[in-house]
Image (cartoon, rainbow, N blue to C red):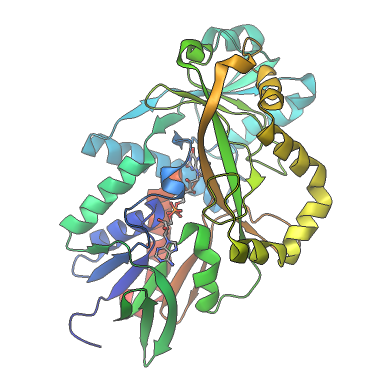
Length: 405
Ligand SMILES: Cc1cc2nc3c(=O)[nH]c(=O)nc-3n(C[C@H](O)[C@H](O)[C@H](O)COP(=O)(O)OP(=O)(O)OC[C@H]3O[C@@H](n4cnc5c(N)ncnc54)[C@H](O)[C@@H]3O)c2cc1C
């Protein structure tokens, strides 16, 4: 290995890769670290296309990595943002039961929030709920005052600044294409040539499964891209939502249902929905990458999921194509909204791990083998959790990658 080969390469310049690189250098300041990002800029994928919500930790199964890292990550991120002057607005959130049939699930969420250490949640009757959001309809709501909004791109950029300040190198427009092991080293093949290193940590978001499989991970998980389209509420009607209004989630599809989010710049977004994307970076409805699509369609888990949930999928696609249908769904929460109040908004694509049996992989997941640690699944709330997740990745790397011990 040449004397200027990096000790470790981090692949992926989203919030998870950048936070991991920052934490590695904080723990091991003498490490020669190189971060590779395939796009021309950092944080252009999931990190740059999300709701910007700093989740409190209400939803996740107690004891799961999501539950633990969301609560710890939120706290760490608030401190990180305060120290670096990154704006955060702690605006709170209402999780609204629009029908009595949702009350049992709302009670379960309340218990779950407590179990996860989210102390400040309160159950509100309809009158108290409307003191917080005067235009909302529903029978009862959970109020989560600690939920906040932030710009995760700004957080990712701040992590990148820290990496550079600590001596790490960040190279953009450099895609990792493959890897090989040779005599205790990892040879990382990129579009600009081969780089030899002792360790590779992959945080590749929508492409996480590809590098993990090259590292030797079993073929038991496929990343399936789910596009989420937003509508923006016209500025003159944005007063209808003061902060965040969320539905009671269906435990089978935690990311479905109409959400309203007042972002940091004051825009109120409705969405995101979730429809199958025909390309891993398919931000537009007609974006199609034949290779990506074939990979999804060849995955047995996709067909098992489709067979079980085709009705939900078709309803979601219908609302994606029909603004009127989507507005009708919004009216369950904000009855004063009309079709004229909504404009097309941005879109994001979620990287969601899907098992061969058609079940979504809910929790975060890693795979480690012979000099490589790959993050396999880092869906929401990975942005909120990023600093705690990065700590866990570095812990795992120090246990499994001998050169980082
Ligand atoms: C619509 C939507 C809304 C969301 N809302 C929230 C929210 O409100 N709160 C929250 O906490 N989370 C939210 N999330 C989830 C959150 O955005 C992601 O979990 C998080 O950004 C994941 O970060 P990442 O670094 O793993 O992935 P990414 O941000 O996708 O970064 C991965 C990076 O790796 C690069 N890359 C990929 N392959 C290669 C390669 N071979 N070589 C080099 N580079 C490569 C990509 O270009 C990309 O920059 C949302 C996600 C979406 C899509």
